[in-house]
Length: 455
Image 1: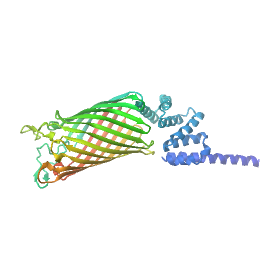
Image 2 (image 1 turned 90 degrees about the horizontal axis):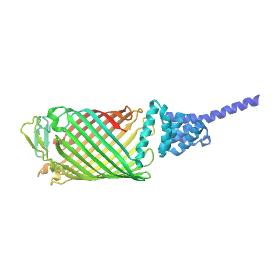
Image 3 (image 1 turned 180 degrees about the vertical axis):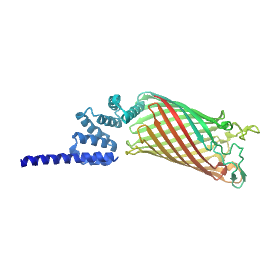
Image 4 (image 1 turned 60 degrees about the vertical axis):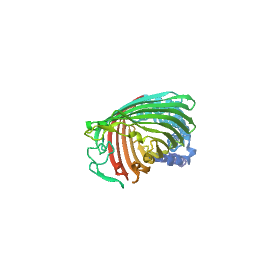
């Protein structure tokens, strides 16, 4: 009797000892600590083959950046419990991370008919991502339309009405409330549409292209001189080689203001991206092109007295070139935060003998996005711009070279009703300071948009 009791106690102790690492891994995963859970599992590799241990170790390995080990563990679990939906879902996720799209699709398609709630949303997102990734070897195309309402506190980036404006060493004057250069606010309606697609031409090589049209129209009749449309497109070739993606192409856009062609931008661009793992990606880019301004006829006053005059905008035409760098990091924790940091430099060389328009522009930006729930997206961003012009403002014999610095912040909240319909709320704010006070301004805007995507 004593021997039997001792055997039972020893057996119970062994079960408890075996369960402890599994329970600890599960607890760490629930605390959004996958790397710690994976490290704990690695210290108990003798337990691999136990179904429950394999399940939690497989999830930990996927989230910690070791998808190969995670898939092997989840495949062992699936052999014991082939009908367990959670196990099949994470196995599909593992196949997706490894790039085995067909096997991932099979797992998700088998789960989709009976999926509900968050599981259904997650499965649809993975299937969408698989379709997007298939653009490497299958032709893809999608289109969208969008409409929105918004408010802009300073739609013309103007100075405050009746404020004292100083041009150093030249003049100080008071801003005329009736001037179109004086701050103006208004509600607006926006609309847009676009299409994009890819066409593979060889393994890892594809052609890509897109077209888009966006409009903004203000409510007040006095502000319709600021109504604008922008249309254009880009196209090029992409080459995928291992973890490296190379893209090169050209783009053309035309901005129309008050029904007149105002600014055409056309140029070449190139980019290299390297995906270190599922958490980190870097990219470097370069561009070269021209900003081609056109003279337009405008009223100098808001009440449109005195007739129209030539804007002289063509004097601003320049050639530009620049470089950019970006780092993106995905955090393997709750809400799936994605951090992006970027820096850019652009040089603009005036082509109309107005060196006071030539300038160097430096930009910094930080952005973080979250997925607080399956259908929700949240983004916050901060930006800094510093611009320095080559010559004295206005090409005058006395005065100062223009120097601008701009601080900006923006945020967005998005909700996806389903695969096609989504809504988005956006807000931006910026504050620019210049030694030429004519270019001092602050601005904020908000907008709500509804979007439909043809999938």
